[in-house]
Amino acid sequence: MSARDDAMRAAVAPLLDELRSEFLAPPREQVVEQHLDMMTFEQQVLDATRPAHSPRPQPRLRRTVGSRPRRTAFVLACVTATVASCGLSAAGALPEPLQHITDSIAHTLGVPEPHDATPATHSGAGAAPTPTPTKPPVSQPGIASAPPIHRASPTTPPTPKTTKPGTSAHKPAAHAPIPPPTTVTPSSQPPAFPARPTKGPHRIDPNPQPKPPSNNSDNTPAGYPTDWRDRAADAAANGLWDCSHVTVLDPKACPQSTTASGAASNVQWALLNDPRLSSAAIAHTTRATDGTMHTVVTVYQRFQMEVMYTAGGNSEFGYSSGVAQATMTWNGSAFDQITIADGSVAGHVERGVVVPGLVRPAGAVDLAVLGAVHDVFVDCTAPSSGASCPPGVLDNPTTAQSTLTGDPTDGATVRFDSRTGLLVVTGKYSMVTSTGTPVTGSYTASLFFDNLALRTLSVV
Image (cartoon, rainbow, N blue to C red; front, side, top):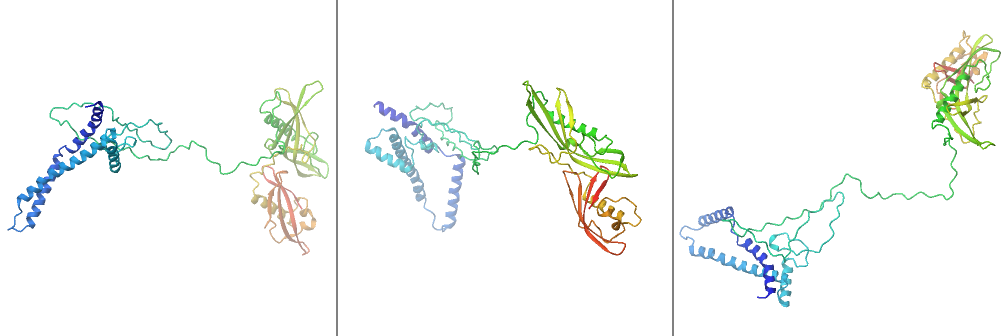
């Protein structure tokens, strides 16, 4: 016997051992018992249906039973020969014509060929050859990869097994585990790749427009603290607080002013708002002739002031609002040299600077404003009223002696002017004079809130 025959025998021996263990192993006792019970039941059924005078001949039964081992042996021989031929064909030990025939039979029966890398799903199908090494699968988020499958090489000689006394030398081959199918599970993590944009990029303007100036200075001058804007706003507000303590109607270096019909006395100003809430601060740095840098800070703030005074023996009140301008410099620790411009600079604010508007007082709701206007109309048209009415329609002597024929606030509208801080009411009135002449018209009332009550400045 040549070395080639030895190699062929070594390759085919494991396959024949598995076939013998598969086909020659005795069935389990439970299977034998079930089979005998079924044969007994079959015999009872046949005996119940057969006439009493015609018993079933026993030789036929013995002939049928006796023929089964022969058929089983024949089938086993055919299968063994076929599989053995396929094993020899897989090893390349058959002549070329017979090799071609066995390859066709193996292909028809589904026996894996040497170049087939598909793993065997049953131990009786033979061990597949070692496949060409491939790259390990790349794990992706949310995808469960199948466990690796180890395949035995057909050229590796079988390892001798040690059997215990009283046990069979051949055991049924265990079924190879089938790898679980690849499943895709939803992942809670975001995808590793960015989302595809749904909109194209914006058009690029080759000639962009210049950026508008900022409301406040975006830079911090050299030597200034980072909160210099807040400090400048506080310094300007302190200047306005000082202006509220003057005793004249038209003070110098202060923004507020009002006029009176005669000589005024007992003048008392009151600041009604917090100027820091409507501030805009900018810094301008210039170079002096000696090369030093000089920075001046300008602060714009909106203000509201009320004045009480005595004129002609009567107590009067007035109102002033607008934009105050304060300039100052930083001395290294605080702002000093604070100067406030005379009068309001509303309409003359530096270009590009926007001063925030005033905020409507919480106590000046529409219902309260309309009620205040209604009370002014009633008080000024009462025959016995001697109260001083606001200038406009109601200070006319003819109107003062008239009687209202309707509510002047029905259908009236209220709006707040954030530049002046005034509440403006627009409506219509209807009266009858003392001579019976009807008087109708439209009016515009201006009011302000002094943090305690609403005061009507005019009804025109």
